[in-house]
Image 1 (cartoon, rainbow, N blue to C red):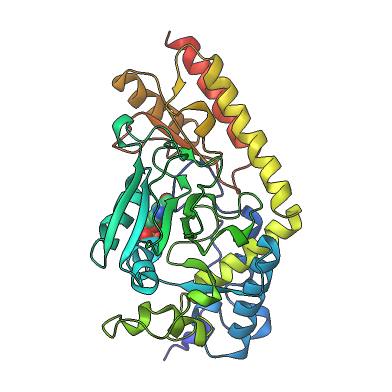
Image 2 (spheres, rainbow, N blue to C red):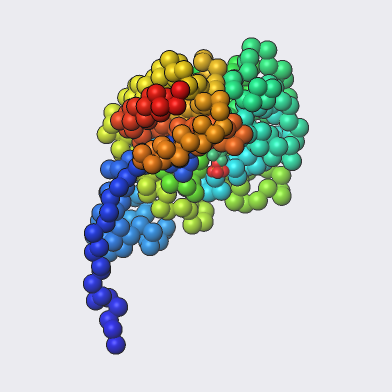
Length: 375
Ligand SMILES: *Cc1c(COP(=O)(O)O)cnc(C)c1O
């Protein structure tokens, strides 16, 4: 009989040909993090198994999640009266969990700046009254609406925004004045891209597969007084923030692997110098691309200048066939996932934290060359 444990692992030569990946999500991860995970895959720090195989109740995993939370808190400067929860169901599940936990008066205000805000509002409508405070739907969400005269009322439980709009490439350059109402923000596609003042938010949350880690994990930062036991009885156990907070995000089996990888990304971000340094790097990267778009005679950005995202950059040539040709040829040159979202068309380059400046420079060189050949 063959001894399964003695079959030598076949060490095939792994062909390494990494591309520059401009995907909106799941998206590029830091190479250092991938290599470290690879090294620890067969035997995590002498325990003889990978993190995917260990009990979420083990002291080994407890250490992983505790360290991840501590590093996340220190990166973002999360105050003590905020809880950090590692949850599943993606950002989309929070579209329901947030109204279920926060709608005391069954009323909230939503600013509609794209598909994700629209979906969040539609979900909240199942649990209470949703007032559309402002919208930029009239121009395919290519700008952030005027925030100076929002019809916010006393009886609203919260004001909801999607702070960086992954599909349309807009971001809020300032937060709305919520007139004392709690602010809830979906920061999925700008998570940890720059320093933020958490005290401006009641809840700041995001799916990590855009700018932080692998798919399957959403991180909520929640002001403690919003974690309540006295919810409607029919709110599912798993969707109650109180359940998750009391269990330290371990009410049931969490996404152990994603928490582990995110923990590594947090350490990578700390090593890079933290979020102020990341902001500077991200601004420099975005400027390389936007400066080119502004001087190009073939390509143009689709977003109002003052509302441009640092993370997601949509652009077009104005000619569908030429756009398709560009995407195909870029792929051939090792520049992947540049096809724009179907509602915008054209191209979109997502240039998250882990995208090196060299990747953006290579993209711009390629665009310049393409422009010369196709004018
Ligand atoms: C991708 C995305 C979502 C949806 O995330 P899931 O984890 O797939 O549910 C929500 N909001 C924003 C801003 C996103 O970019």
